[in-house]
Length: 158
Image (cartoon, rainbow, N blue to C red):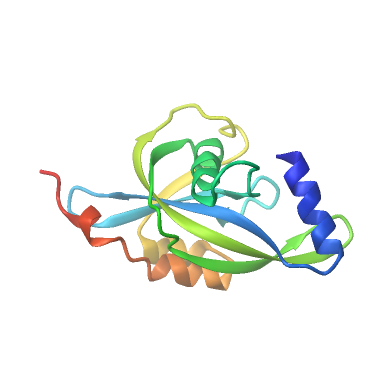
């Protein structure tokens, strides 16, 4: 993954837009409400969604699934269609670059007690409106607040 990040930084230095992929882990409560999981970033400790650089040989959806497992310790089914996109300013060593992020929904089926970045991140399940208030990126906040889960997943599995 380091090579992919270096490639992205090279593109950014040329003035090109760069992209990342992200997952919004979600689950349905016993009452039928939707909750989303946020994780803290490693450096600033702000609440974000799991995200990362595209991975060579993997689709954006697969890369988002891997990021969710590594950063949030969740497994599940990542929906095929992206839920949306957002952009943010990423801090590099000596500049900021604009990053476009493609976001996928991850229907969580398992929450791991121990995962790769457990010691460096905290995670929290929240109602979408509450999660949106904790997110600094305006476009991501709006995406989370107005989250629409596709209809077949809203059917109660009683």
